[in-house]
Structures are given as structure tokens and as C-alpha cells.
Amino acid sequence: MTDMRGEQARAWVVRLASGAMSADELRSFDDWAAADPRNRAAFLRERQTWQDLDAVEDVFGSAAEGAPSRARRWPSPWLPAAAAALIAWFAVPSAWLWTRSDAATGTGQVREVALADGSRVVLDSDSAIAIDYDDTDRMVRLLKGRAWFAVRHGDARPFRVAAADGVVRDIGTAFEVDDTAPHTRVGVTEGAVQIETGGQLILRVGQRAEFGRAGSAAYLQTLPSDEIGAWRSGELLLREVPLEAAIRAIARYRSGTVFVLGNLAGGPPISGSFRTDRPDEALDTLAAMRGLERAALPGGILLLRPGAR
Image (tube, rainbow, N blue to C red; front, side, top):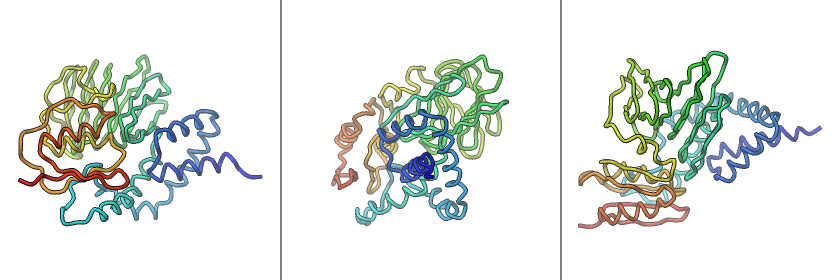
């Protein structure tokens, strides 16, 4: 007898592994998984089978470490066709990420996830988490992107979020963990958190800190609490960031990849508020402000480079 449920689960694993899931497909997957506990169990079995292919994972592991961000500097002598080819290549390692996740978002999608204990997580565009609850601990791993957590209390188990080489422990809190930059950033919108990475650091409302993959955490500029995680309401706030970092931040909400050709260093930093549902308008604004030339290629690819002087 055909195992229809298993076939459906395998089809979902393959589709997730493709790295090309749309927001509508992610919602369809969520509906399928929630419709019957046996669906979810079948998916977890098939996902584990995928993850156990260690030999294949070893092949792609080194490539994943060097995978480019959605906005990446590209040596200008290279042809755009080479950039397009590499998009497909680097999609393969990211497939491993999505098959490890328990909740994920597509590009441009912001999604709220209800956890088993009543806590809530809001995932930003192109983000993923893995949930690991047991009898003694509530652990969530931020695999990619950015997430905001509102923790339900009255549960004796500690609530912790792991990202990079650090752990953020809730102390009565709503907070953001952002792993979209070279260093992981944490900001508190309510209550307090404790960052554990080498040493320990306490953050309270409005306070922020960052930590890397090695070393202790350091405080960042304090912000009004409503500016932390403003992306939840569709607003991307940039404060004194370099031009190329601003492009990367906006490009996370765009379905087509953005490549930066040439050197954009120098010039005053970027500050402003942009709509996450209008990334092309935001990029047009930056291009006009800084005299950048832009070229659109098939597949939604966008090239930006300094204009002629």
C-alpha cells in the first residue's frame, strides 16, 4: 500500500530544500503540517533522513560558510552571467538550513509563530528558527535572519535563544535577536535579558548589545523601545550605517538578488526610514542620493555600481 503521507512529506522536504519556497507555499506547508499530527511526524522523519546524509552535507558544508549575503560585492570585471550562475550554486547549502528549521519565512514575508508554551515569535524576512523544548528547558535556535520574541511566563523552564556563539536568556521580556550582520545584535523592548557569551551582560528596555562568534558582548547605542524590531510593522529604520550595509539591509526584502559592483566605501552614512514592502523604491532612493547606476537583469537581479564622475 502506498504511503501517501510519507510521499507528501518527502515532497515538502524536497521543495523546502530547493530554497525557492514562496510565501504562499510556506503557508500551504504550515496548513498541511497543522492539519494532522501524523503529517508533522512524517515530515520530521523525512527531514531527519535528509539530515542524516552526512556525506552530502560534507560536500556542501564548506560552501555554506562562504555563501554570499543577499547583497554582495561583486568584482566589476566579472560578467553578470557569472553572478546569475552563482545564485543557483549558493542556493544548495541554504537548503540544509531550511530542512533543519521548524519555522521559516520567505523573502519579504513577516510571520508570527505561536510556540507550545504560549510564547510568540515574529520572524522577519528570510529567517528561520529551530525549536527545542524539553522537560527542563525552552530553547530556540535562530538559524538565520532576525526574530522578535514575546515570552510567556509562569513556566519554570528557562527560555533561551541561541545564535552564533551566544545565548540570550529571558528575564521577563520581549526582545529582538538579529543575526543579519557580521555580529549578532540583541535589543530589548520589554523587561530584561541576559546575554551569555564568554561573560554575562544584562540588557533592559531600550538597551542593545552585540556579540560575535568568539568573544564577549558589548553595549550598543540605546534606542527608544518602539524602534527595536520596527520591521514587525513594515518599517526598516537605518541609523548611521554605511551605504553598502544599507543596501544589504534593504535587499533582504527583495525577491531578486542585489549585486554591488565596485567600491561604495566613503561618503556620509545612511539614516532613514524605509518601507519593507517597497524595497525597490528604497534602493532607487539610495541610488539617487549617492549617484549610483542601476541595471535590472532577468530573474529580478539588480546591479548597483558607482556612477561616472
